[in-house]
Length: 296
Image (cartoon, rainbow, N blue to C red; front, top):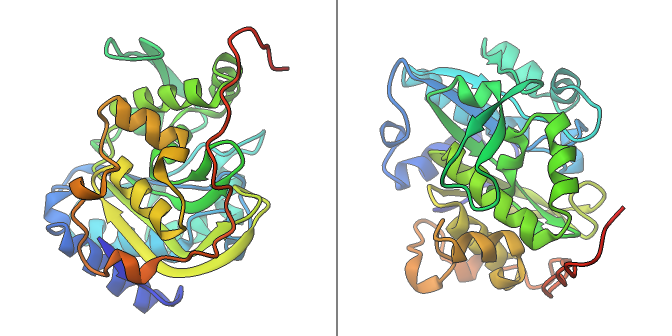
């Protein structure tokens, strides 16, 4: 579902979020009363939300209110990049302030456990944050941004934040090639299985993403239960071939979802009316790292 949202005015965002989730069948299709639902925004490095590095707090608030009003218990969090703690990142991004206003508790993303995953493609064992393991279901709140390695980052890559910080560095060293790293994301997404993805594209990031690019207004919120379809539609909105994005290519090839226009039913706004052909993004596929190359 594609829904217009012209600004981060809270009332506009609330209406757009409810409209988008209703188009997919309503909040009752996503969660049940008394369940523990984890909201997983993209925080990366806690920054001013106007820099468009993080999921905007108004989107987080709109989704959180809907879930709470339906009777579920809401938790939230993300594993930020670098040495920053989740608490610091959430405060800088204003998500902690909003969570406090709604009386929503943070989940534990600073620690995790090794879990068995026999169906894994890259790894039969994953390290996942305690907050994810302690929840009944996850709602993923990605931000639409460019990315130097994966060309764009969105619904699929947002689940990398379900890995606690210390382990993220281990995985990056273990899977230095972007295509192999994308296969790891297949395993993480198949294990976490978010029930819903709500992408913040009211203001996206173009250029040198995912943290040093420029804000670009698209005026959209995107909704799906299929992360491959959602990222593929986001790619078409920014005039990027989805098959140039390793996370989409590898996940689709593994059967996680579909990027084909023929397989994706779009509700709400027509896709062609949302395309921004001038969006600044690299429109070519990354070159795989040769097997015998070791990256420092």
